[in-house]
Image (cartoon, rainbow, N blue to C red; front, side, top):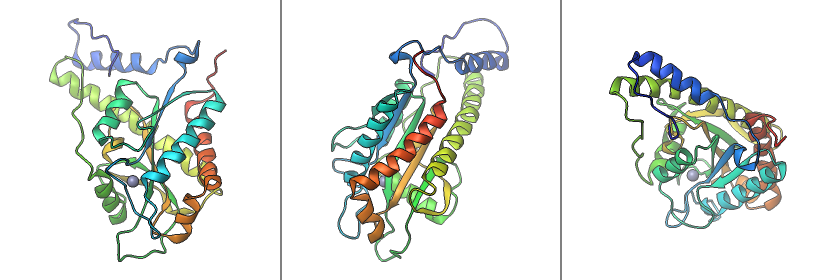
Length: 265
Ligand SMILES: [Zn+2]
């Protein structure tokens, strides 16, 4: 909600909330690079948190960072958006901080990059990419377990809302969430469609789980699990730059589809 001017006029909370939501929807004209939508890429894990560990020892954090860099490069070549990253080196960034970066920088979208692994002792046959949006109820027990693992790093940060009455805050939040949820679903669908045919997909690749990093109420967000490090075939592929470039190209297409054809003209 950063950047919203709250006018102290005696109007109903509903009217106030609707006006603010309308102001939010009117995007400023893109006149120069600074006006291009900001895409925030979030390479999962880092530093003391290696993320999932592959069958042959590959650490998730070492896959997500180069994949995000490749995606950043491709998006910058496209010239339709600015790109920022929640981390650009092997450092630990708390999940709440990642959400905060998306919100304070007013990102047009957040794309979190991960690679999954089944817990030790469970089947190594499961493979393929999947895309998650946030939900209060997980798609299935696999999704729920995954979200638990990804959220273990820390807890969600608090929300910053403008200084209006609690009632207005509640309405604003609800409007924001509705709009953001619709955006997140669209982003995730675009990502699955772009990945389909390019890389192996998990059954039911469009999934929902309670990911902390996707919980900004005002930034559409999706989390891509690029494959299973517990599957030797996926692990070998994710270690290869040409395979990561394939994933990045598909995600570039999805991001372009999401932000539309805004240009510098
Ligand atoms: Zn992860």
